[in-house]
Amino acid sequence: MSAFAGLVERLADLLEPLFHTTAAAAAIVLFTALVRLLVHPLSRVAARGQRARAALQPRIAELRKKHRKDPGRLRKAVLELHEKEKVSPLSGILPGLLQLPAFFLLYHLFSSPTVGGDSNALLNHQLFAAPLGDRWADALGGGGVFGAAGLVYLGLFAVVAAVATFNYRRTKRSMAVSVPDAGGAEVPGLGAVSAFAPFLSFFTLITVAVVPLAAALYVVTSTAWSAVERAVLFP
Image 1: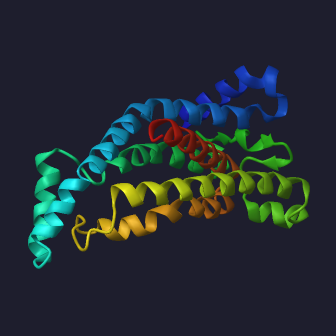
Image 2 (image 1 turned 135 degrees about the horizontal axis):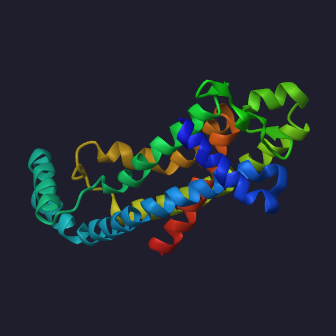
């Protein structure tokens, strides 16, 4: 973790002339953008997969008609079609999974009072009036919802809520096209995922509230990046 702390500190030093006391927060945003750039090729692959799944829908509709009286045979036929066309119904989750290590590194770094046996100097950095190692509960205890630190969190919540609403509408629309009511023809387990998926972005609000502010910044930046990326890759 010492090496990762050094990376964040070096990025903060580079950004300090521009961002001054919020340089460490800016470094986290920059780090998040770098992670997302590394994952972007997989996001493009996921976009192609979603378009391929949408293209299969007419053939799946034919299978529904053919096997409408045999749900078990219908599910098997749909699975075989996906395998034949080399289309994975769950290919879109890989970019998100690969970001988890970076998130947990930030979470651990800004939850630890020491790094490599020395005091964790990164905990002294702030985003405006909110320390990067604090949580929303600390902001509420220090000045309330409308205190200096509380207002920082309100700004983050507003960004997350706006992005979540955008993602909700796009996901509902894409699900209607790529995963329509299959009358039992969907890949086993995918129906529950499809019903739950539009609401996933709103759970980001909970994450932002309970993790250290540095990790919350990662989540907010990554979520906003995903919204823009989806708008470009899934027009």
